[in-house]
Amino acid sequence: MTTDLFHQNQKKKYKKAIIVGASSGMGKELCRILVGRDWAVGITGRRENLLKELQEENPEQIVYRAFDIRDMSKTTKGLRELISELGGLDLLVLSSGAGFLNEELDSEPEFRTIDTNVTGFTDIMTFAYLYFEKHPPGHLVGITSIAALRGNAVAPAYNASKAYQSNYLEGLRQKSRKAGHRISVTDIRPGFVDTDMAKGDKMFWVASPQKAASLIYKAIRRKKRVAYVSRRWRIFAFILKLLPRWIYEKI
Image 1 (tube, rainbow, N blue to C red):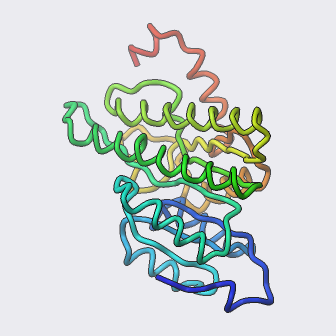
Image 2: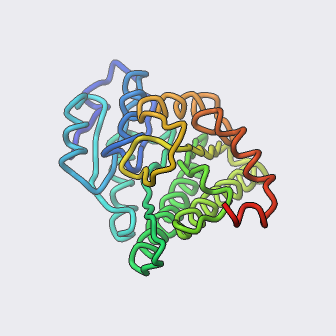
Image 3: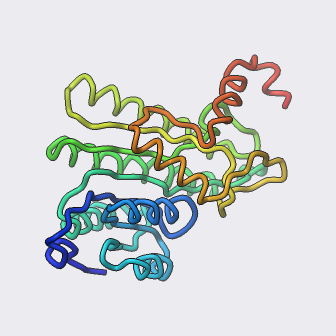
């Protein structure tokens, strides 16, 4: 989808964002929030029909590119095209991810998770960081998970990949601060959210995608370093990190 937003709308200056993974769930709802607050938004995802439906809600402020972040031959090209159409970039949110309950340790879901949450994540984040390094200031946001805090017997690749993401974001934040790059980095750690990614029969404190997106937007606006969605998960995280290994491994 190609629309030159800024040549058509010279009278209004929009802030510019890209949401990677906006075809459904939190990414989709966050797009709607940003559009309502005078952002022009580039959205990406695998399902072009869903991106097109979202774009048609506000074609003046939304453009899209369909690609899978595992296909690194397309991600950089797609992101560059979106930045060009938007006329720049102030914020990149990476909301795309994969995760499976995999008690049998089948290799395909494990490596699909790694390809998406580690390899694809790194590809997008390094591209965005280097862009903002040349065009400061900028804001990088990664949607990680409460799962980043400990391992999990039934979803080992998912929890491990989320730990990787949180540590990578912390590294980029430290890099920006030490080098004076003026790049803010936010790690969003949701608990359970009612999306296609939410699996299992022991979920609690489940937030709607709309509620989660609203809290994510507040964290973005405040340029939080780390934010839990919702805030009650911060207490859970504190307890989870304190649990001795011998107790945690029995849960």
